Image (cartoon, rainbow, N blue to C red; front, side, top):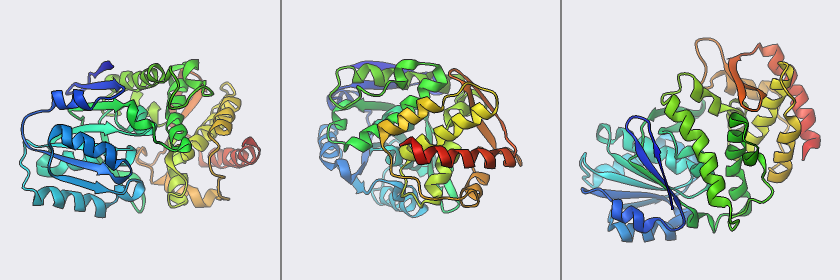
Length: 347
């Protein structure tokens, strides 16, 4: 087991290893507890509930439907019906959507209760569970409502990855690949050996998580450096919204990384497109629907990273050297045309 500390206010521990339920039970705070979990991992969640002796339990369907105002209100009402006081702790078990929803629920119920996260997908482990970002979607766009609310602790239990479908395992590692570009870490961009039983998986995931930890510690509230973690996400989120979430987050971000690589080349940077096309071939995402620029642009124009009237893009000029700046719409449109041509032959 590896223990990291995320030194953002307030600091919290992050445990990484195989079989962490006993560790969580030993660390459990006093006071009332409740468990919110994805029904897809119900067996694992109920083992945790038994170890923690948690009685109030609520299972919901994961996926983007969990990140709606309706589901958010339903979970808040459930907590209220349990009569849970302010010194309660909410344990959240599931993938990235549960992590985002559960954290936002904890941040707003009684103006804030404790939250402990058990991410059960590679996406949630590498990205959603680290950094204290929480949120839900609106019909107008993704993650438009949320808060910064660090958890009390995070447990990355690799045993929970064993039953993931192969694509779900792979798509979360798109974020690890992204961290490789941000940190200029070639080891994170080598994807071929990765599978749930690979002996180097724990070390690989620690390496990926540490990239985000360092960025978050330097910029907890996304005023500057942390914006680079949005690499590939502006178009990615727009593709998710434009396809009504039939395109998963990992697949959408993989496509978004190719678009970002083309933007970098258009701005005089090194050509990273071959590396990202290798990612797409490894991932084998669903084909991108024939979406025109007019179909995706309105979602990007409402992106939560917009400042004033300017939409800021994360542009990779080379690994380890990214800039965040506005880009003229005519440039974006032109690169989108090239992007569609590359996607047609990349996979």
